[in-house]
Image 1 (cartoon, rainbow, N blue to C red):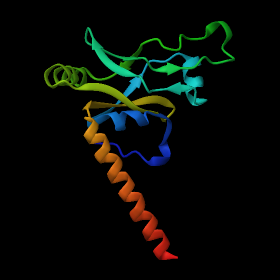
Image 2 (image 1 turned 60 degrees about the vertical axis):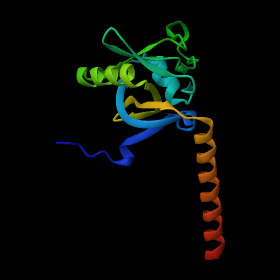
Image 3 (image 1 turned 180 degrees about the horizontal axis):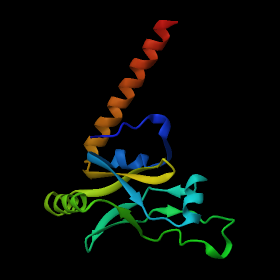
Length: 158
């Protein structure tokens, strides 16, 4: 039985806009992250960057690498290392499935966003594969044509 999540329960804290531009997203999943208190406060303050981040499975555990969480000014001596690797909380079956796809088909695990859900910081991970340069041009053409259509519709309504 699935639980219904309302949009009001989820607050997006950071997005990786570059990931959708650089990769084709095939599948997404939610993962918890093991964080220190100063890291949670920095994330809530918006001092996080997901641009170079990626996830990897090592010895049966999922890890998030290269996610930069800025230092929290009020933590003093109990602060964290900004670019340390952080453990992802996933079920064993999810980890096994991800390992098989990453090794078999050449996929990469990339975080798309960080969000807060019921007071916990979660990561939206995606199984992705790279886009070619013509794919990127095609996407930008579609975006531009959609903007023109929206502009024409807006001016027509007036």
